[in-house]
Length: 102
Image 1 (cartoon, rainbow, N blue to C red):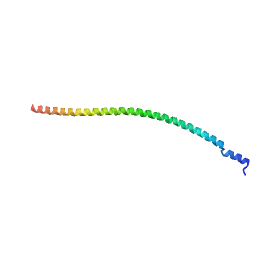
Image 2: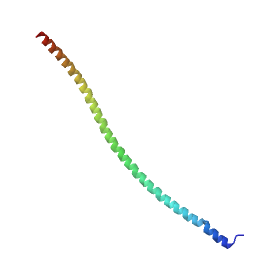
Image 3: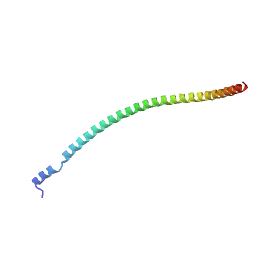
Image 4: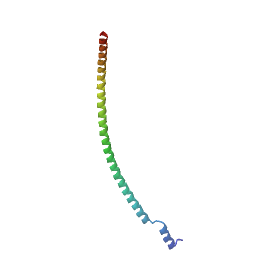
């Protein structure tokens, strides 16, 4: 049989329902505080990432615009250089023929 002395020893070794409930409530409170802190940090990080994405998009938009402008200028100048090269070749032919006459 279990004596009163055994019950006292068992109470010292094992947790009672009330003690277990207190520990569970404390753990739940701690977990809730951590979760709230993590939620706050996550929301702040999300805002920072949205801001970063907006700044990156603006920079990329500017770069794309600059490259398009550069490409358009390159196409126009390439066409002009082609025309100028034809004119220079024509002048060289005319100079060569004039030099042969003289």
